[in-house]
Every structure is written in structure tokens, then in C-alpha cells.
Image (cartoon, rainbow, N blue to C red; front, side, top):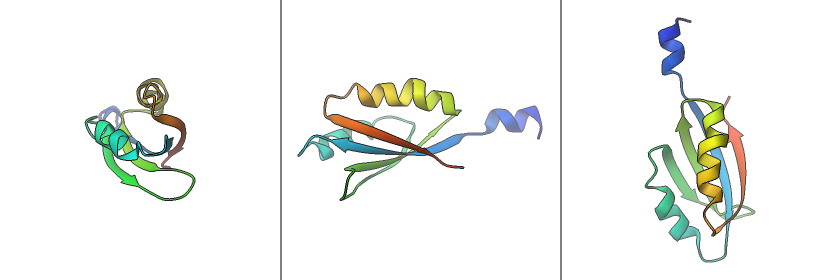
Length: 84
């Protein structure tokens, strides 16, 4: 693979979020404003929202995305599932 192709590679991951009761729609609206969010779905079960995100590398997921999301008071917990 050439260095040009490597620079254009992106990393996608699913982020599963538990949020405070009654706050899922508000969190969804706020997260939809971020350019790295490809899709957000409200779901039933142990998690309330599932996000598909796309960034330049795995380090950006931990250093940028999760810090942004975990700053939101309504978010109780997250689970990151990188796509392989």
C-alpha cells in the first residue's frame, strides 16, 4: 500500500451509549452536530444510542471522541466497538 493510500484510510467504530432516562433524544440531537458522526440510532436494551463514527485513526477515538461524549452530563457510560 502506498503512503498516499495509508493517509486516506479512515477508522470506523460503533459507540454504544447509556444515557440518563428521558435524555436520549437530547443527546442524539447534540451528537448529530459533530462531523465525525455518520449515523445515530436510538435502541432498546442495555444501551440507548448507537453511533457509527468515522475518524482518521484509533487514537482519535479515545483522545477526541470519547472525551467529547463523556463530557456530556447525560451520558452515563460508553462502549467502543472498532470495526475491523
